[in-house]
Amino acid sequence: MPTASKSQTPKTQAQARRQRLLAMLAEGSFYSGEQLAKKLKISRGGIWKLMNSLKALGIDIESVPRQGYRLPRAVDLLDKEAILAALPAAARQHLERADVLLTVDSTNRFVAELSPPQPGRVQLCTAEVQNAGRGRRGRSWVAPFGSGVCMSVGWQFAEAPPTFSALSLAVGVAVVKAFQRLGIQGVGLKWPNDLQWQGRKLGGILIEMRGESAGPAQVIIGIGINMQMPAAIRMQLVEREAVMIADVHEIAREQTPTRNALIGAVVAELFEMLQTFTESGFAPFHDQWLSLDTLANAPVKVISGAQTTLGTARGVELDGTLLVDVDGELRKFVSGEVSLRAVKS
Image (cartoon, rainbow, N blue to C red):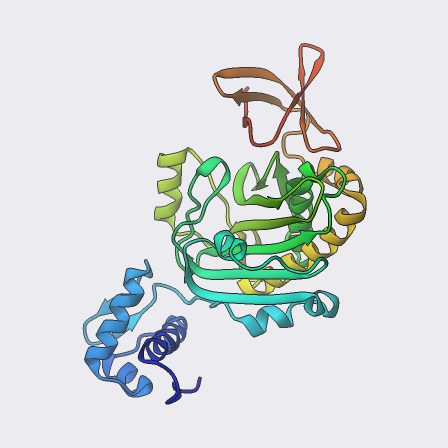
């Protein structure tokens, strides 16, 4: 990687050096402070400052006397060129911009602050560290450095398509197809926005929309996917949110794709889905979603405010509403107003 040019500001030079340092450590091997200083052409004190700046982002760096510094495990860093290479030509040609960041408060917020893309064009943002990521109903999204994918895609509909309220369900279908494209099987969908594997949470989807019902509608599609989560974080989530999680490495093992390949596959499938959804809404994806429904015909408990309803899940309507059989009567529940739990027998 080239050294910083003379035209760069001190801040830009520091960012470039931090990126180069992280790229070296990402190999998982030890580097002494002297080796790092020589390669980056800065003092040992400069290396110490860069190390602290990375640690301040929540990046765990091991320091062992007489061996040096390293990350606890090798990490495949996000790389814009690798993501672009993973995209089919059609999707790449319609990609308006792609931002691959070291750190951001929220990839959704980053995309939301951009000018809306032209209809039919895609904006992408992904980041190594997201320090204010959000899930559904205001929950935080936990994703330690190198352990997952945090990405957002921006898209603009010229006007809201049919069954617009079911967009998050169609996104789920697209993400599962991306997994299948990479040879990862067995991923299902839990209404309204969870990716699941063997009953555990693999990822989540958060849709944000801006616009008017009769005019252009900008959507930001936020997706979080667990790639290789540390055991300590798994325990933290169980204790704090009572959520059992899965990750891609657990499913695919030695066939685990790189994060760049997964992001590319997801963007490609989202692009195809959004084109179809623009014309036809959720109808072309309805049967696919039902085949992936992890709660199909299962006893469920639906919590809406202070009200709890027990019944049997019966899939979804074309507008994305959940159908629950309650004593022989089909009731509808709207995404965003309820939480859902499987009832243990």
